[in-house]
Length: 289
Image 1: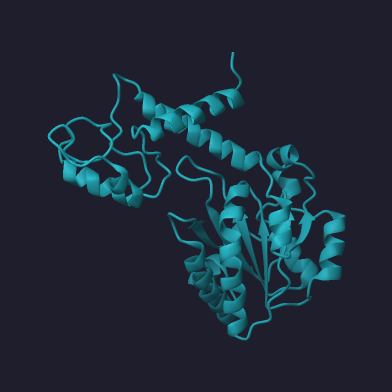
Image 2: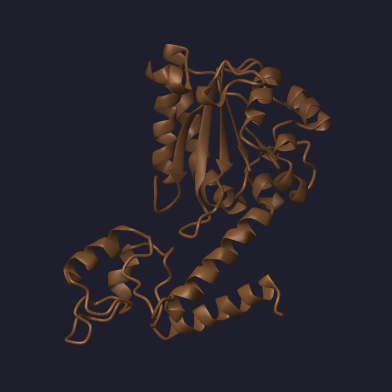
């Protein structure tokens, strides 16, 4: 039997060939590209898009929906099964999602951004995935590096972590970090030294808060990839944190990617959220009381 990696490579090649022939629109491509690349409406193709669903009840409504979402709508079926091109696209998306979980962020990317790099206690990718508890703890060398190289007692400490999607960090961090940092500094806030944590989980920010004495910690972390995108990042923000703090105390800004809340927009929005958290001295459920 073919292993999963080989199947994924074959699927990718088939998708490329079909796309080159104008027969496939991949579901995770920007919706705005659909209409531009689809054949013009005709008697045999009244909607002017991929003809996966024959004779839709409302072709115009289907066209409008396909332009507004990357979800798999109007794909039709072949008997009780998915059509071939839908199945191929699903396999390709699944392969991309797997790659994002198991791949590392390019060290050259982190170096180019000038970020200190530390690790959690997970130590390697397989442990990171199977032992979330170790991803919530910083390794001893990482703790020492934070104390030596990061500013202590900031109003806001921002850092990035791969989490479950390296692709999310590489796609969004370079765009969001300057907006967020400069926006907070413009408000007169003391912003800590940004850094990157490899093999990190969300709750590692609690130890970061304790080590650096930060009032607010914001981790920009890759989320578990879906079949629509593998580049979704979230910001988890917590006030006056400590190891063991309830999860309900975190404020989350999610769905940060090119087809959701864009990185630049997210940076501006998170800046305002952090200011509100500092003003009210609360985050998570306490912020909405």
